[in-house]
Amino acid sequence: MLIEAIGQHLCVASKEDAVRLSQIERGFWNVISIHGAMEGRAVLSHARHVHYACFDDTEDEHPGNPNRAATHEDLARVFDFAASIGDGPLLVHCRAGFSRSPAVALAWICRRLSARHGFATDAVKILLGLQPEAMPNELVLRRGLAQFLSTPEAEELASALLTHPGLVANRLR
Image (cartoon, rainbow, N blue to C red; front, side, top):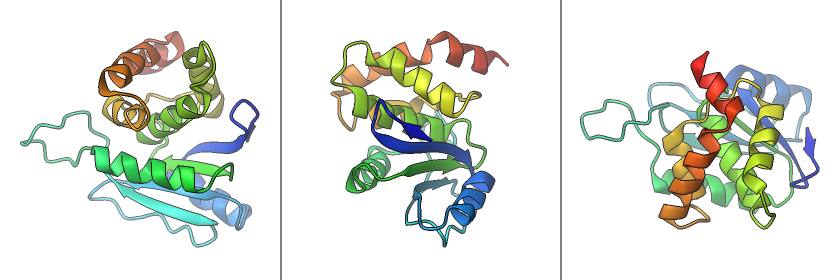
């Protein structure tokens, strides 16, 4: 879907939908493909370019957690890839399309809109238009925002974004 406010086609999807879309629209999508440590990678041979990122859907980064939390380096590579395609079409997916990929997409939308006054509300509206059931992973969102904001600014913005009524309602379902 073309998002005029950011000047880019953007899609947030599940793994299954990403595979289907890349087959239907061959050579169109640049894909950020997020998979967990115990999940297989999506086969996206018809995508234009693919960046694979491996981290689990966890917000717990404590050493005893068996899941692999997203690191600052993971998100730096994701955002480097997204920046490298310029205004090219971007599809972000994870297994279900509800948590990790919406967090990456929301941070990316914020980055693209950050020069505008009141961009946070607009960013959430855009995300919910792309993925109405979005429940962004807080850790992924904070680390994504920290790619272009200071850590305190990223923390503050993540808190503000996650208290948007549409996102709160999704978490309560």
